[in-house]
Image 1: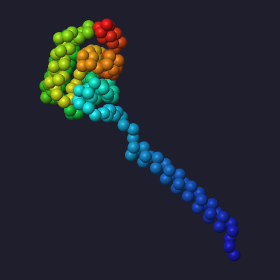
Image 2 (image 1 turned 45 degrees about the horizontal axis):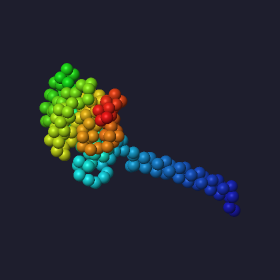
Image 3 (image 1 turned 90 degrees about the vertical axis):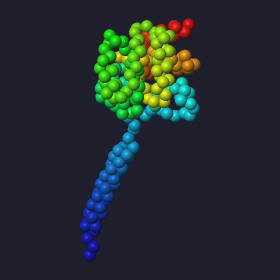
Length: 199
């Protein structure tokens, strides 16, 4: 005679095991989805066709470890030795340093030489970059061709200022140029000075 109680017990047990297996499979699926499709730490926008000059006009990038990164430019404050090595490995061939001699350039010069980087110093102070400094920067940047360039000062403030002025001289709309400068580290004081210089 069929033991009804035993059948019910086995059915309940099978149901419980099935539920546990389904739950484990679901958890495993979530874990695999997270591992195989993580969100990128920082994605640089390279969208948009056009000449290199046109791409620079609508420059876009991402802040990584305090530095603005784009396909052509890395910009910000004073990099560490490990950052310099990383930048060189990532394609940087030219370093343009906007600090003055009084701020100490020897370490940066030596490190650039050890990494086979072209080091250029264009000292800037608390005032807007002079016409001569702007021209020297434009020449140095153009001489780098399509190679990646590192632009830095101590905090990124002077970098953003001279980049904004450079872009404005190239016909980039004021607000766009200033937005790019802010992304590189330019502070409100220099932004006001740039605006005032155009009035």
